[in-house]
Image (tube, rainbow, N blue to C red; front, side):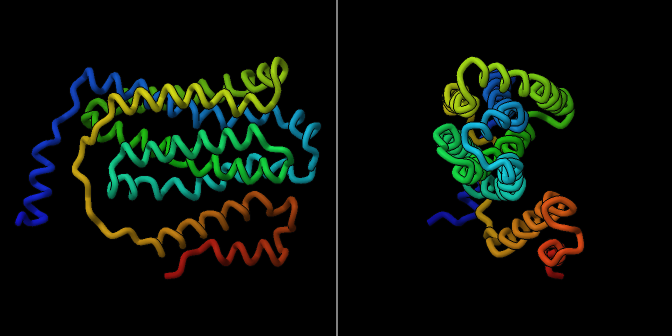
Length: 254
């Protein structure tokens, strides 16, 4: 019977460095994944007036954006640990699936409360797109060449911040606000196919115990901090009981 160390050594021997051709193909899929997450942060803002006119709920409009940011920010640190445990590819599959599933639900929302909940589901998937893309680039590309690839990532976010509002306005005027979410489906499908055909495991898996309690505490503190920054001074005064309670909860125990 082989020992765990022997199994790990055997798995390490079967992992070969990425070739330049592999890097280009995988990077093409990752660029699409990054564009999905980046453009969705800005494309919705332009359609908010039309969404309110159709669904109502002006007083809770900000939660359409806030729920997405809360979910994506809270789940972002978890994806790296899960990808170390289960592999980059399946965890990236999950992130893309959750993002596209949330997009379908958002496009089919019948009221603002549904849209807010569905945006949170979409945010759970979006929280894994950027960190996993960065991790995979780090796995494939040597440190001396990572700057060039990271520059492309920064350029994608800059471009999407400009294109997103324009695209959101065009889609909303020509079709409807529902299509700003449905348009993610064909783009995400292309990214899914490219990644499924090109991406492989470039680093050995690490069979480590996941600290679920610590992850829960970290996520709770992150959400509490974001709620303080979002609601403080607006919906609730800075000295109100809810804000003070959230402020106390945002610090993890020593």
